Amino acid sequence: MVWFKRKSPGLRIQKRKEMPDGLWVKCEGCGEIIYKKQLAENSYVCTRCDFHFKISSRDYISLLLDADSFQETDATMEAVDFLNFKDTKKYPERLKSAIQQTGLKDAIRIGHGKIEQKPVVFGVMDFSFIGGSMGSVVGEKVARAVDYAREKKLPLIIVSATGGARMMESIISLMQMAKTASRLARFSDEGGFYISILTNPTTAGVVASYAMLGDIHIAEPGALIGFAGPRVIKQTIGQDLPEGFQRSQFQLEHGFVDMIVNRKQMKSTLNRLISMFTD
Amino acid sequence: MGEIVLDFERPIVELEKKITEMKAYAVEENVELADEIKRLETRLYRLMQDTYSKLNRWQRVQLARHPNRPYTLDYVERIFTDFIEIHGDRQFADDPALVAGLARLNGEPVVVLGQQKGRTTKEKLYRNFGMMNPEGYRKALRVMKLAAKFKKPVVILIDTPGAYPGIGAEERGQGEAIARNLFEMSHLPVPIIIVIIGEGASGGALGIGVGDRILMMENAWYSVISPEACAAILWRDSTKGVLAAEALKLTAGDLIELGVIDEVIQEPVGGAQRAYDEAARKVKEHIVKNLDSIRDIPPAVLIENRINKYGKMGFFKE
Ligand SMILES: [Zn+2]
Image (tube, rainbow over all chains, first blue to last red; front, side, top):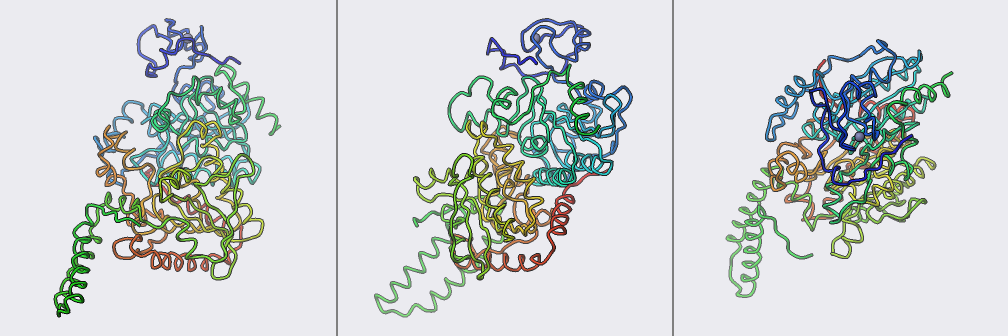
């Protein structure tokens, strides 16, 4: 297990970007120029410093589940603009461009899959869809995933990548926290096994609901995990935040995640955990 | 209490002042002004009806934050008898932003809790402006488990500008504390009545806000984010709170239409800050009525209904 400690703090300011096109990519962790193909072969983890690049829900499905085992459910579910929400842009326009850019319907995909032949219910968020924000669709899909796992008595795995609740659905997005938590409570009461995987970033409304309600919490190295945003905290207290604040190692030290697992060992870790309780 | 006047209240306050002065003058100078006073009083009544029935969302947010608005303990002393405050989460500390205790509602023992704001500067700091830390959420849970153990209903009053965003709060797991409460409250085997009495800001409010009946006062607000914070993110300008309040649809009227709350509690004309006793009487009526309607439901059914209640919240197509 490698926890990457950044040596030069100046680099942290750089905005995290999705994988750019082209043959080469610069690591945000160490500045190394890496051949893209090599990076893909290494699960999008820097070959030099173990920095974990942001990856899509599709990438997680192929990394964590057996080949071609994922059968997506509820794939046609889409958000609606029930509040007529408009800020500098109308919500339907934001949705439309997110759908076009990502090829996804919303910020999560759920379904059935297998890990080393073992059937699981699997949900994976996608940060590229409006910051992985949780609105009605994410809340309903998480709730249904919990129910599928409950009905079929299968382990549930959810990979989170999110900035929190979706403001354009106001109070209804807040209620998704209660919706998902209440379904998990029932699942847990009946002996269901739930593993929450927290990737970079997992914050706000999702951390304050299903991401922090697993039987086991696994964080990817270097992930930002927290309730309040660093900017808000900085404004409130009027001082700089300590190095590594709200990162995976911080959450491990404070007792809120069970382990930090390198993406390359994630699938084998899930396999070992699942076999403990279900074999 | 000092005189604090919101912009839209100014014409009303001025007219009230004029009536008071005229009444004093009539007595002092022994002149007959009854007709004139009556005319002004009718005008005042109409002005108040007119002003308060047409408040926009931002004005309601201001009323919810009115410095003279009754806070949790103002309601507790008027609604309940024999209130015994209890403290601490038994793990780390006592959080004064959350008051909790045992009390009687029409003689019947219940567990009461709610966020508490301060009135003076000193009190405000002591209460941390009604912003809870993780130990506050854990204190709330500890007290709710006490209610479950002794099979007593839980009454919760919500009034918070949000969960506290601080380094210590994150170190002690603000997110986990709120998540845990949502989880535990959704299968607590006793009735839970929630009343949003002032501000209901985001996860900080919901962290003690899962229940069987959700009631909300006419001039309270409840949203995923405060209008200012929303404006700062979406408009990149925190002064656009007026626009954000409209977009967020955060009033009691909005929330009953969206199916998030069960009842709106009417406030005295002009807001709860104008008549504490009357406001508290209304809140009590609603709490008693709602508690009576769910008191005899068996715990397993109560929990199933509660899970289904939240299960219905959401709008999507497929
Ligand atoms: Zn690197």
